[in-house]
Amino acid sequence: MQARQDTLPHPITRAGSASEHAPSYYAASRHHELDLPSLEGEQRADVCVVGGGFSGLNTAIELAERGLSVVLLEAHRIGWGASGRNGGQLIRGVGHDVGRFAGVLGEDGVNELKRMGIEAVQIVRERIEQHAIDCDLTWGYCDLATKPRDLEHFEEEYADLLRLGYAHRLQRVSRANMPTIVGSQRYIGGLVDMGSGHLHPLNLALGEARAARALGVQLFEQSPVERIHYGPTVRVETASGSVHADSLVLACNAYIGRLQPRLAARVLPAGSYIIATERLPEALAHELLPQNMAVCDQRVALDYFRLSADRRLLFGGACHYSGRDPQDIRTYMQPKMLAVFPQLQGIGIDYAWGGMIGIGANRLPQIGRLAEQPNVYYAQAYSGHGLNATHLAGRLLAQAIAERESTGFELFAKVPHRAFPGGAALRSPLLALGMLWHRLKDRF
Image 1 (cartoon, rainbow, N blue to C red):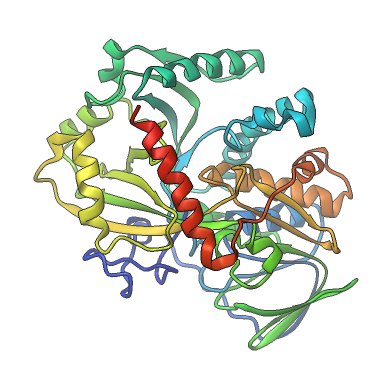
Image 2: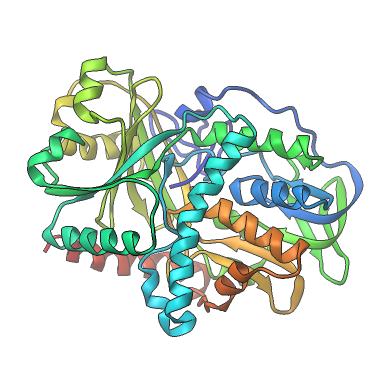
């Protein structure tokens, strides 16, 4: 999942009410606030970016580094959507089973997608180092197997990463050695990747906003876009101002709503949920995750979890495609956590929250430009790989806009993306039915 909070699109209280506002763990542990104005009056820029999450922020940074003037508009607060509320797992890769696209991209194109999935994590690493962003970055991640076919997939992934010259340590973990990774009897093996890891996503977003501002990007919060006038010069209107720009980047992902109907039809907002325990004793935290890795299983309705810097277990998953939040996220998620870690029985849950990720029909990020408006660019539908893929998208968009060419951008743009059938009313129920089928397959 991916998201932030002070006020949230689907605000969740600890009691689970979707109509009340309560901070996520990330909002409660952020390092600083940004004092950003709302848009008033007219602005002129080379590029207007709509969306103050990772996609928008990193596009703005990359454009500013290339000498372009940028205005960024965020409807709520920086990091308010998935970017500031997600699981904080920084994992290599940009999509699910990218080999499926060999018919469109060729084998060389597929290999380039895989290399970009590795590069995406490196971009995050470099951004954090360059701007000294304090976001609890910790290296170490493990894919968890619950079925023999998961282990077969790990063998293929291990061989493929070696073939690509992966620079970080990989380790296949047998069932007997799983207690060195995770203190649960549920898993039969794993694949450790020391080139992936975890971090505090909201502090990363806030740090990147500060970096963008230092580079000259004009950032405006509480400035929802009401209308876009397309043309050789784009005019973007809010309630109290407007931006004139040569190019426009739409970086709204699951929250694009009715702003651009063609893009909205290609991305499905899906809810994902996290609970955070009270602070754990050091010995218990070490028992759960002895090497402080982020971990994730391979099921469709996956579990993902990690430790925070102050020794809370952050346990997430349960992606919902129905468009409805659970009535009580804590009650909904705690049994899932206890099924993995029964030793947490009696441990308090201090935070429970949710947010919306953007799902595409083919599970590959959608990065491109509107055919009918070639100066309008977009990035969306990261399908759970958003923390790293957004940073890659920002670089590819900036290359395409500022340098007029980008091999990576053109590669992504070649992949066709179908609209979800049935319009907005039927989109979620139809996908929910399809995902139910995949969940049933998980049981066998």
